[in-house]
Length: 349
Image 1 (cartoon, rainbow, N blue to C red):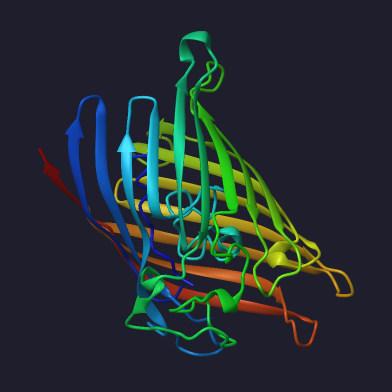
Image 2 (cartoon, one colour):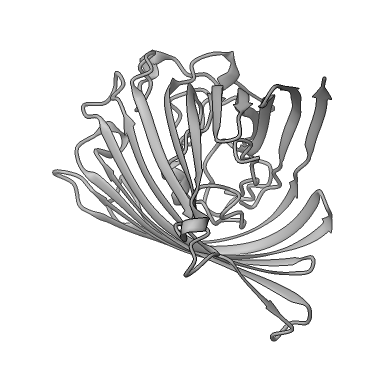
């Protein structure tokens, strides 16, 4: 599926999709900056059908984030509808190619209400880099904020990627009506030896819901790097951003077993052009079921039409086990994507 690049506000497919960041109202007090953040996301909410034209099929818009933010010099506090941090390469800022997150979205933490803090420390004078520790507690969103417009799929359908409504009876990890789920991540960069290297560590706990038998535990480790070269192969400045990630989920989706993802992504940009290449391995293991060894290879090329608009085209090959037959299906998918991203800010004094 094609996915739009969403905005991360705490740190300041073959369908057209886009994301808008709605007004962020900010006002200042003594040594504190407060704001109201809202992120709207447009995405296909139903799965692709093989051999069909899927342009705009199941496209819907929903609220991904809506929260209050209080930013001090060394700590940020936030509460509301949030996207709790966990992995790196499901983030549409880190991997925003046409099909880049098709597998890694499996461990995305989306549609939760909660609160948390981000604690920052700068130890560059000692050569130890800059660090940010983010901790949050949350629960699945079963309020009206979960609803989507344009397309509003009902829960339970075989092709539904995201239902418009969610009740506690629908189950799902984290759907408990209690703040008994949490995650913690540590992001580090600015080391003396490799100042442009980023290191990401994450842990997530999801309490079982009504339809699950186990609690889910997730672990993530990722590295990313940014390099710039001048007049090498291409004229001007070329930015190269590789990233790799390992994620392990014990009792994935609240059921016995484990899931593992190995993901690699590279973004190369020069002027208005950006090229993406993604490879992901997904291994699923469960008792009394054959193991799944799914594979994804995707590439896409984007052109910036305007500071707020980008147009891209891409291709992906994926090998995915069919749950009914137990055999692997080989898919070849091509698509285009039109992205729009705009920030609105209104200051209140």
